[in-house]
Length: 116
Length: 115
Image 1 (cartoon, chains in turn cyan, red):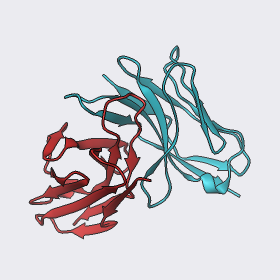
Image 2: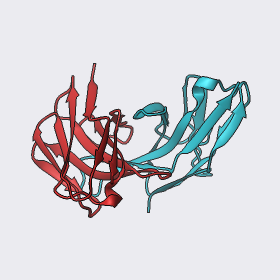
Image 3: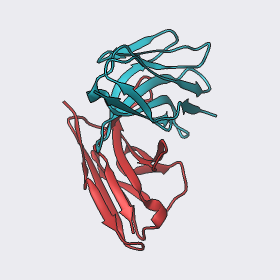
Image 4: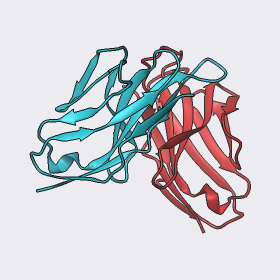
């Protein structure tokens, strides 16, 4: 079946540290991959996406590369800020069971806390 | 530009009471609409999706129901809430179609606590 596995949190870092949040997936076919971010008390916002193998998604200093050979989509940032503190969700998009729509399959989320 | 509104932001309801959460989308037509639930410490689970007015499908059996009375309105309901219905409910929309790179756009969410 289709599934997403993320590293468990919380991840606690000091400001300007390097961030990696691991994400691996299992899917039939060729899904699109996404990272969403959820700031405290808010809904989810799309952070970045990649639609095919070797694509690199990037936004706000975050990057992730679609690795088909390792079925991974790890999120990285070279220098985190306190404002990056949030929950990060890895997700893949697959056709829905009955067709006509796509559904997102999410990982459990990884909480990131950045301290000054 | 498109926007999505979801309300209320928080809700505390007794066991056995009814539920109605509403979501509306502006700035687009014929969107796909979704209700997701986020349980504490877990990822998001798709509850319902809709590809058109009056067309509702569910992927998981549950105590909840959904309706789409208008093109850009999506309602999540229950006749009698259970404790296990507590969670964070998110409405989302995507452009019509099944292009695999179609992303979903989420509302701010409703935190429901059943007591």
